[in-house]
Image (cartoon, rainbow, N blue to C red; front, side, top):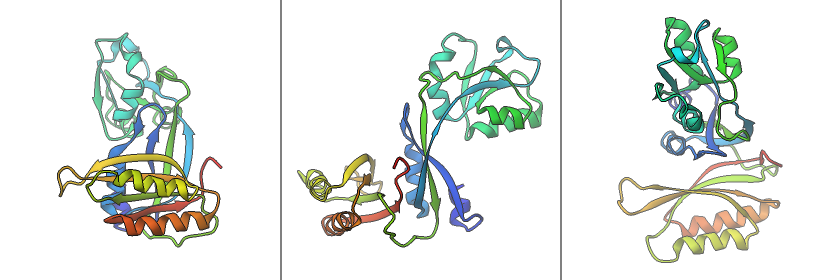
Length: 237
């Protein structure tokens, strides 16, 4: 998806970035950075995971369940009662459902949405199998082009790298606080080219655009590398 967007095959894409149970979806942070994608919006969606398979099967007939690693993690407790089932990681929840239908595969189940079961003609063997029922995933809408800053923005995503010295991160976070920004997310990833050094992916929310622009200008000076990954309207506001 990220590659298709970068190549101009599509204008926008939707990418899961964080889950209330499993936390940050770190590979997607790396994909945004690798392909130079920009966040233009976000949406929070309640997630319900369902175990499904071809019609006529029971859970005792299922030997393997394939799904995205995050879906498997969120349903791990359910499968403790079925030790005969092997959990297999796949790229996408709906894609597994599609492949089961396409290949008429018996003995393999999928974890996916109710819509996927309806589209691909699968039977739901067990509904809502996620461990924590209040399960919310944050999705971001991404584009290849860098949109201009708008007065309507109230949230931003940054990536920055600081000098590898004591107190550098604390100083940067003080700027965020002093400019009345609310830090809602911080995630670090190693800088591959420089062992021991980290890039920080940060989400901030704010009420006044002027405060945000001030903080951004200060961090652009302080950081050895600073990149805006997106400036958009807060999906929770």
